Length: 188
Image (cartoon, rainbow, N blue to C red):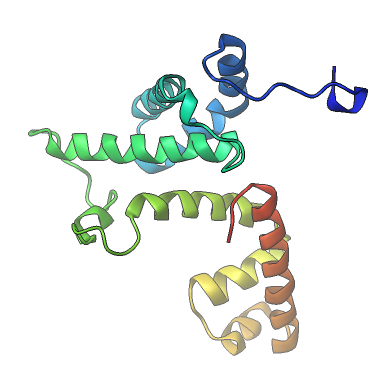
């Protein structure tokens, strides 16, 4: 029965096979697309998804719905598995890493100060998904001004709109982006 019918749904317990299967069916596709974007290897992406659910099952007691949604928790695990996969691939002699693939690993401070590249990966993925939900005009305005850092006047001239219109598109686009990200369970 549903909550509306008067019975509360039991909390998710990934130690129960039914809950694990439901979580897999609900999130495996997104997790695989995330891993594929980062690793550019379908086999490795499938391995990441498998490892995510093995770790989720092993550490099911650590999941707390009050802290984060199941989706966010699984993506945190996926981020860690992707990092482990990249580190393992780089440590294995004879397997070159393509130039540009996760090159930020080399640029990070080993002492752990500053953001972790895996956080950047997850944030980028969520941002791409959220931007896809915006109107084309708003998405273009945000990408050109915020992401690429171009001046408003230049972008407005290119899009053949007044600067005020471009600023409105950015303002409302950012507001809609926040709403979309909140709906995804991603705090800004």
